[in-house]
Length: 157
Image (cartoon, rainbow, N blue to C red; front, top):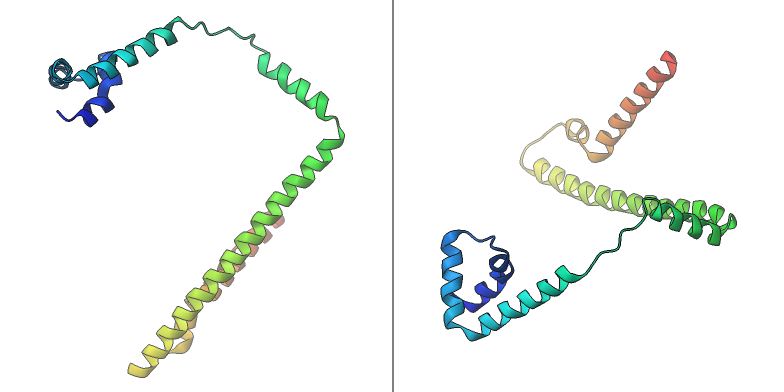
């Protein structure tokens, strides 16, 4: 086996998570390769040290206590700025989305015009039929449906 592959699987080998065939191949390689055997010893040493570390038990309300302390330090004046910052973030996102939609509209419009001019050269077609499926027309149809749905919901309420 290749040393690179062996080193990638040393952690699994050390934990005994490899299938029997790979486990035997790893054992054979480790007997013949001192570099990989040394790396396995290092992994075993590190894992033994990590097993000795005791993780402290935190109280159940630890996170809530920390968050309360943070809120007290910030004070109430920052709450209004946080709302403003959230609004600004959303505003920037909406502006960016608008620019992307505008860009997509122009790109698809160019394709539609190019398709129209190509089709008109070869055979006469109904331009109104093509424009019916343009992005702007489809968007308008979608907006009309949304308005109808909104009106229906208002009439029910």
